[in-house]
Length: 298
Image 1 (cartoon, one colour):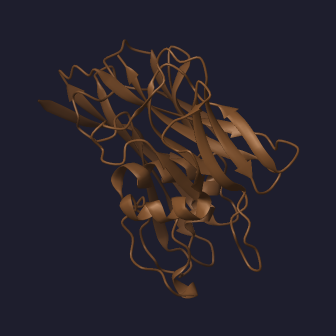
Image 2: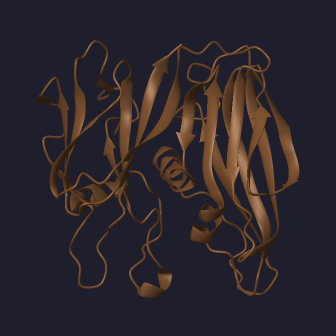
Image 3: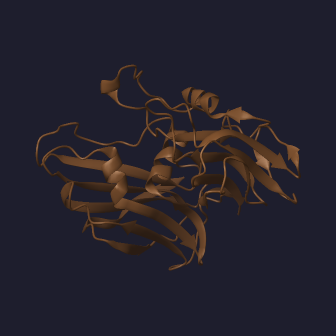
């Protein structure tokens, strides 16, 4: 098996725009997208970087196979690779160059010839970068994009990652959200607006339950507090037991995981089902962001 790693965008000056790029035609393992620039007055934080990157999307013949906002990509990277995306140069000095890299995956593991995006024709597969000029936090901001192709790969499936924006339901309490039907679901990522803070014990989503054809499937109930505990199985991070260390990031994300052993044994199969829902018990009447990581057959 051979691979090709190539540059698709080199030192491109970040602008407030949607930048579109045609992707290579060979089977694709993943993309690497890096954002870098010089801090204004002090270091550029992860949150500030993510505010510049509104959304990253990949579409095939007009159909989304990847469409996530930057915080949700951080969550996906942490889920898949058990580590946070790399952010260089922890230095608060003015004009310190910092670089954040995000991985856009087409399989749960990289370099997997059986799980990647299949070969396409020129112009069929497109990357879209929605960005905002980071004028207040960073100078000379640039974007680089590279792709990893797997020559001769014959995948049977690929990872499809898309987001559902769930509007505020109008009240607290149970809120049923329809999930995609037809594929096997590896994980449902929940990014909340409200997470416990000073003098608050409230989560935007207090509990989650999954229903397939109105029958509980796997998660009969999972409390947000306990779902954060599950991050020990996925997120390799140093203990952060004092305030100076900051929060474990992503700080407001939990995973409803159907691939806990990464061996396909517990995937949520939705093929042929009439109804697949996640029931969110809302602690706060507010918007919630769900990202669904599915395995799409080729």
